[in-house]
Amino acid sequence: MASIRLSALCLLMMLLYSFTASSQATLVYDVVKGKKIIGTLISSKIIRDNLTEYAIESKVNVDMILAFKIYSRVSGVYRDGVLIDGKILRKVNDSEKANAHIFWATDKYFIQEDKKLEEFRQKIFYSTACLMHWEPVNFSAVYSENYKKMIPVKVVGPHKYMLLLPDGNKNYYTYQNGICLEAEVNTNLSTAYFRLRK
Image 1 (cartoon, rainbow, N blue to C red):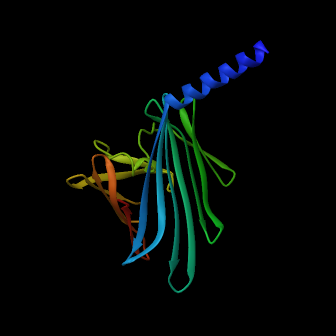
Image 2 (image 1 turned 30 degrees about the vertical axis):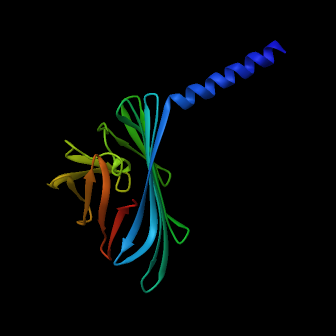
Image 3 (image 1 turned 45 degrees about the vertical axis):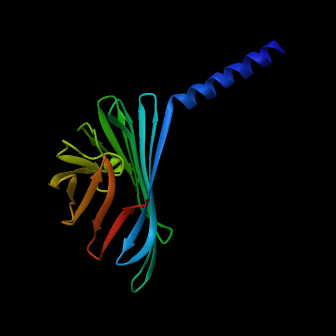
């Protein structure tokens, strides 16, 4: 009986510790094209001890000549300010278009995708998974989970930043109190906006 009580007490202490040692913030955005809401983006930030996890998950339906259902999830886990694990998954009409994993091992990163393993030696302090919860002040480049490389970020106005993508497109992010209020995302086919719900 005493051992059961001790186990229950230990479990209770662990639950209380995990509750007090962690915090979570969630942001919800409408994905807008023209005057129409075409989807939702949810961005989360979870802090637990010296680990911080950022994640962005979006579901979008686009009707052009054909109908497209697009799902995307980007995440990054940071320990003491350094990325130690990141992932991207993107599907179009349930068909997988991207699935990559970057992880830190001793003195470098490994990027795993399509049964290939590549090395990446530059330490990462900010990635695109952070964009909605963390204004990229004093960063000149951010790691793109999608492109698997560093991409330039530039200040273009008060609390407004431009990401120059490898395909030549430019995305714009506007912040207030460190949180992204709106993002303008450009592709070769269209422009969409992520607008924070109030």
